[in-house]
Image: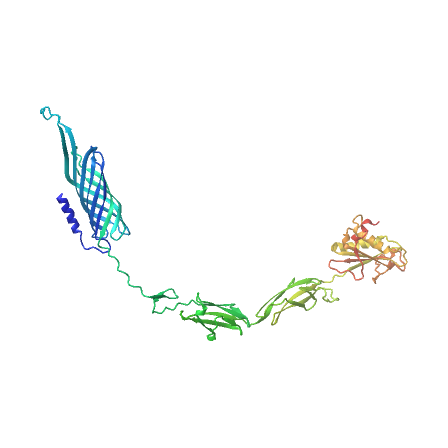
Length: 568
């Protein structure tokens, strides 16, 4: 036993070296112990209670040397009224984690255990050899004590309460002993479990922090910094920005100068404006009035008692006046005589205000709103060829200061005049509307040849009569009968569409048209007024003009010609 105590004491003294001041140099633990013993064979497991004390020397923040001494006892051993007491004394290293008020640790300690066990008994002697003692009551006590090897390895947790005091809610160790079993000399090892809890006291190392020096008197500056009461606050940086609305304007207009100070109050600042490098104003509400065209650089310098100087600048462009300019279009740009063309114009300007709607004029013809009308153009009546005229359209637009013009042209064409073709007259006997064979030759042969060359042409039949003839509608009947010959489409009659045949019946009015009998004069019986008993025949090619002598003509389809059939 003395050998074990000497070993532990030497280890403890060797660990007492110079220690750092941020952890305790010494620790002392006092607490409760509970041990659950597990013998290997014929002795059942049993529990013992007691107490222990630990003394720790810490040469390092994380390393300590611990001396662990304690005792536990049990009054009922293996079902007998017996006293079983173990006194353990061990020492070894401890490893601690000191990060906060919670300090977990792990240790392994080695040493010895002093074991003692005693039991009293009462009995009656049976001694046949000594009759005098037989039946005597005997009271006795048996016991055993031994010192053996022991070790413990485990972990625990200390919770710091104050600088010198910590609470250990629990520590758990594997506790190994080598106590000989008197009943079985081969059972000499026990694997036990030890639990402990208590108070840990700490000494040295951690020194209380010295009281802080008295705080100097300070003041808070506008920028948020704190300086001594007698010191001056640093000037804040001023975030200055400048813009103009609008940045482009015309002479006479004004632009608002917008100042950004980054949150600083205008009342804390002094302004100085320059225009193209020259002093301009010191107002805090900047306004620029445009005078002459050009580019202007406006700069602002600002400063204040609490702010360092800052500068910003912007550029304003003053535009010069530009009169309206633009284009005019005619759609279509080529028209036939009598047609119309739509006009449109687009004008832009600068610094003259709103541009009014354009006004149009034409070198010839007429303008109605935004349309050109060519129906009033004058043409050379003696020229039957195709004619062209170039009409100049002028558009004018005005703003508040001036006017601009734009021009375009329209090509107006008049097709070549196609003259109507005069065929021989169809002559009639006095008081008769029947178309004779000579007249049919004119209609069925000569007229037919023209129609076959141009089947889109128009036939005009103008009926006449003499004043001596009795029937008043004889001229109308003669024109209708002639129309039936060329439109009936049956027998010898032609099938010219009625919509391409025009009929007119001016009666005794010969309309100044000369007499053309050709070879049919004798077929109508002659006489002084044979030239008045007729139907004047015209063929108008496609694009040709109606003879000027013809009036009140109407399409055959609008008459009763369909009911006449093909005349005999």
